[in-house]
Image 1 (cartoon, rainbow, N blue to C red):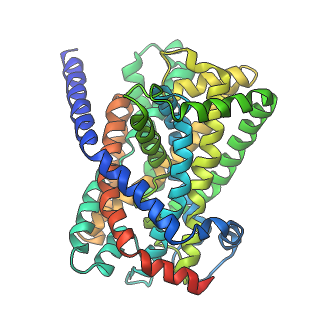
Image 2 (image 1 turned 45 degrees about the horizontal axis):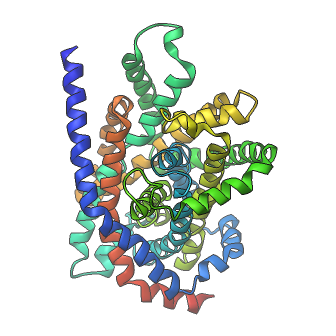
Image 3 (image 1 turned 45 degrees about the vertical axis):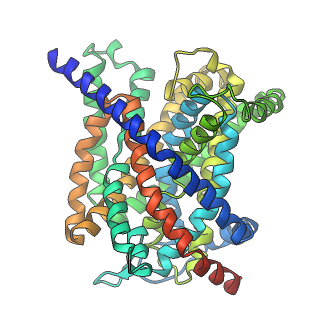
Length: 452
């Protein structure tokens, strides 16, 4: 068992390293995402938020040509964001900072909708074409094309960080933890928790390989079918639980707003720590400013960049304002936070179990499994695109094999380690992306007001 203790020590050292690195750059990310997002919000007069009806109309309208549809692009993005980040990530945020963290997640989501409008508009405006005529877009492309002087170094920076940021660390880890906690496979065959995690990790890797090795079209076909069903099911069960406890909703909201400005709410140290925690978890949930979404929306067959931007702006609203709010309210109302030893997915499972006739955890397990699997499918494409940009496009698919192997590692890693990897990588991706959006913001503003 000496190898086990050695691996645990290595994980502890890596976790400590990532936490130190994150603390040194998170303020930069905070000011770029929130400060930059607020600038974009006022610059464009919040117009995309006022065009939500138009955005939904565009989402379900069809446009011919090479590439994927707007609906498929948004479904793929939501498959990667609506999932364990909304279910487990929200629980982690409340565990670390209390209910008040929800307010800052909402604020970040509204700003995030504007950021995604800008980034996905640029992903269609500045893109290349493959030999077969299919579009090829994303942050690395609009950086390289629109910023000829320093765009290429930014694109390389973004792509290197992206190789780590899109690894399936959090999803595989929390999905494995969910299956082990609820099913407790040792009651059938006692192999030990660690061995069961390895087995589950191998199963997830095999299932993921079947889809992701089929390429972009296979991924969007599967996710565009799964995501609407699972979001609808989660929304239906969540609203049912809230309706059955309607009298507790107002007190829960009051608690959120009162604790959002509390200097003692965050275990990490005061008001600003609480705000940063909310921003970090919201960014982790809906990926605002990170630059992942433009990699899918850049493949859309949309001819009008503004139309793609409007559809993309729906992502954070559906992801954080809708799904995360349901999760957060259920956790607060259930009183599951009183069990201080529960964190992450275990906290959400306990909340669902309390509020839905004692079977909520089993239903949540089903949804978590489908959400988690769909996230595993979609994240691989981001890495393929990053590696393809850094080397040659034909080499990009090799990333899938690294990705598949990392699923097994992530299944046995500690939750603190995987959160550290993702938070650090996302911060490093956000910095060049947000600087680029701010630099090109006048171009997007001009297009919007000329089009609408």
